Image (cartoon, rainbow, N blue to C red; front, side, top):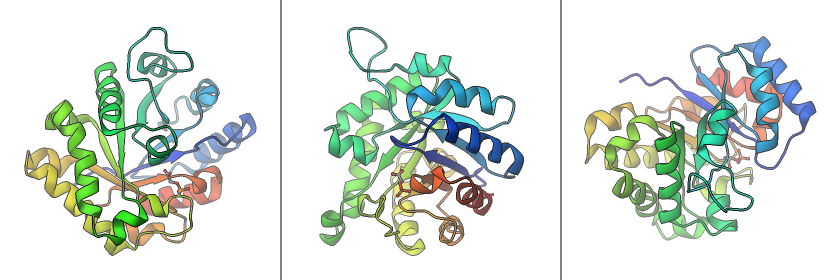
Length: 249
Ligand code: PGA
């Protein structure tokens, strides 16, 4: 089963108009081959980035979305609005949203459903904390997070979706799961989907995220069940991000 790798840059609450220009320019010049590349900046930078990337084949994504289509939801942004600004992807269930903003599995499932219903491709994040890993609960935790969405949306919903395994203890810490540790979790996630539908499991892209850098990306991406990366800090540095995209391509 060949799956086109995807590398998505999650800027989090970082960046500027200057970074929009710098990264878009560098990526246009570099044209990484054999890999789909997406950039997920903070909302206000979407229009400028959409314009800077137009015609480049590079995709745009959002870091979050509202779990409803419209209404009195001060501060929220809907899937339809993101589509108007050229987004193809939306990250849902990032551990920072789960931990800092209290998003639970039900809310993550609602956001996932909303994204798909509107025509966005959700990038569903799952991952265990250090305490959960030490208690050997990793597989149980990530499969529970995935199945909360599968129960709500049906396994068919994974046809137009991406999964991202991001161990919480590896995000922004400089600690990375070893390629073997990550591969084991990815294989477990794919097997859990295969229990419901083997074809969908075979086509599902599962990204790894958590301190991916230019110098550790290649062995991670070489694993059979790792289909690219969700990149935080290193996506803010053009050279570093381009090197990661090349390692996936
Ligand atoms: P990091 O973040 O690459 O800075 O560890 C990854 C993420 O949170 O998506």
